[in-house]
Amino acid sequence: HHTRKRLVMGNWKMHGSLAANAALLDGLAAGAMRAGETQLAVCVPFPYLAQAQAALAGTPISWGAQDVSVHTQGAYTGEVAPAMLADFGVTWALCGHSERRALHGESSDLVAAKAASALAAGLTPVVCVGETLADRDADQVERVIGEQLAPVLALGAEALARLVIAYEPVWAIGTGRTATPEQAQAVHAFIRAALAQHGAGQTRILYGGSVKAANAASLFAQPDIDGALVGGASLVADEFLNIAAAVA
Ligand code: PEP
Image 1 (cartoon, protein in one colour):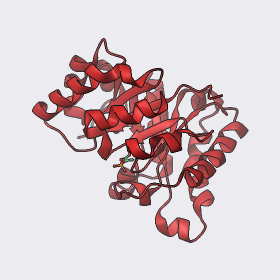
Image 2 (tube, helix red, strand yellow):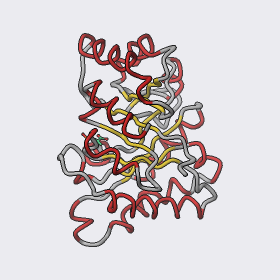
Image 3 (tube, protein in one colour):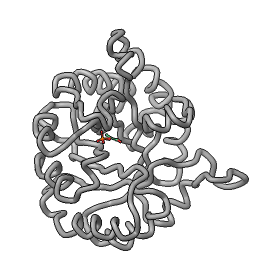
Image 4 (cartoon, protein in one colour):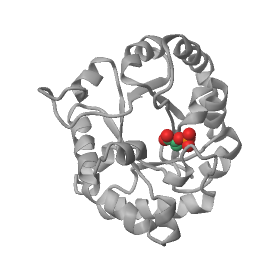
């Protein structure tokens, strides 16, 4: 019944070293078959993209960046252009992870511009949205998600068909507190309806927030959850592969 290709994506955040990554990437490459039909990907810190490329080229696992610039080149110290990512075989670029929205002041307009920038270079943006606990307690989930999505929806059907949305409630990220499958499904259905109104009802929507092998299957059983964006649990090859195997 689930026609959209499932995707399980790791977000290493600012973790790792050449030595630790080598072991993790080897473990992932060796066990990739366990994911079956589910697509596997890892978003690594910029300096390790070349290492990910060397370790994962020729495997079914693709790699991505955790951010991307809206600019193509120029006097933007510290920024990384999408074409630079493409130079390292990158497929994916996270856009607007909640840590970037909260800690780096990224607005929803900037996040949408990053998605457009990634698309223009042939990368697939993974646009992250999600409410805080205060938003949820105040019954503002759909308003907040709607505002975060609006500039992305404005990119149009063609762009929307080529990107991925990740619903990551801020209160569930790195907290060990996962949204229940029903809570997640309700927001995924809301996002799906907004995408459908803009001609992109089949865009993949990932769930993120303390996903682990033990809760993956019940999340993936929901009709509008097409996979997961995984932080902490993506740093352990076996756990990450067990999450993917839960859908396979
Ligand atoms: C994330 O950073 O995207 C995330 C979902 O983190 P965690 O799985 O650790 O909650």
